[in-house]
Length: 463
Ligand SMILES: [Fe+2]
Image (cartoon, rainbow, N blue to C red; front, side, top):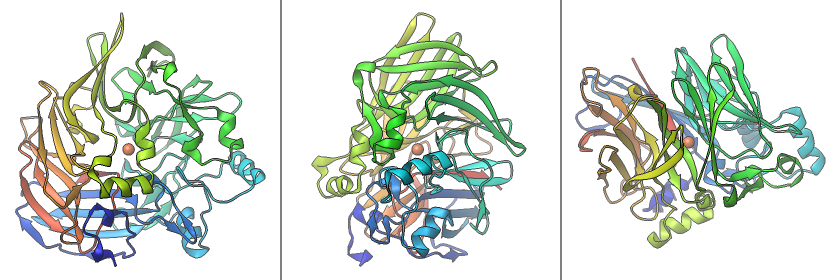
């Protein structure tokens, strides 16, 4: 029984219910200015027929919608009706390779799937907005559009120009900008732009051993690729017989290579070399005179990927001493004389968010999640001016990514709220937690009738 779970392990159990609730019970008071829709995606089951998915990132995608208006919150959730989901539910089969779990198939079938462009559409990582349309994203070439109100799946609006892309695009003037890795005899990184009229490839940079990069940086004039030394031999992806991420090798002797690509010409402007490290998430990047500054949540190596296999997560949840590998804010400075890096503050921080108005400009505050004990269990506010931090933590509460929403009349960068879906293991369900972004004081909680499995990202759109 789900209710038997009193630990964060509740968040690794399947959610079967698909519901609509017009008004969630609310404790506290929601600021009267807060009005809009928080859409989130994430895994909601890790069982496909007789196949047990192995990694947190593998689970089948579910959409969640919280609509805030006039001090009330409505909620709905629905599985993303992808091809991956249909074959899982109708045939009990895993039809496509996931992050760390592959279907059983012959080498011939593997090669055939690579050349036919078949890849997973299990878009469980993030939500993106394309004009008035919403899409769920994962790291394959296939985004999945859905209806913001009904959460019904609507189709595939475009395909990324490579087998691998990111679920963390940047936005400018209504367009989405992203990079993809095209693997083959001549592999390349490709930057591309998507708007409602279609997709355009802006730049193609040859690469022999592509790095696993879950996100990238963008300033006013540059795309910033931070190539961690977690790299793949492209032919191995087809021939090895291993799931996607297990084809990548940690080669610290390569160091971390940073490339600036001119956004207008598409040409490489500069390359730098730094110590080996790994990150999933860029925080922000901006130009400071002729320098480029890049903030990311960095790990000393890529062990975190191993730590997020489900068996390892269960171990961390049962034994605080086996906590997840911790990431810290790292600031890169790229200058005409080379690159340097420094850690800012001593707070653990992941799933970072900033005030979106500071994108491509200097930011002061970063909000994210922290790991005080075994599993993600706090929200962190890091002041990059002096490295100081504040945290929100309550026993039995396991918050997710805190999405910053600015007060419309704000004069300060941190005047706003954080929206975080928190698992309340004592109550056996999740809540939409609304915190004051400056003090991290809880302002309100809206109780969802069921638990929402631990998930990744979402976006808030104002109404
Ligand atoms: Fe992410």
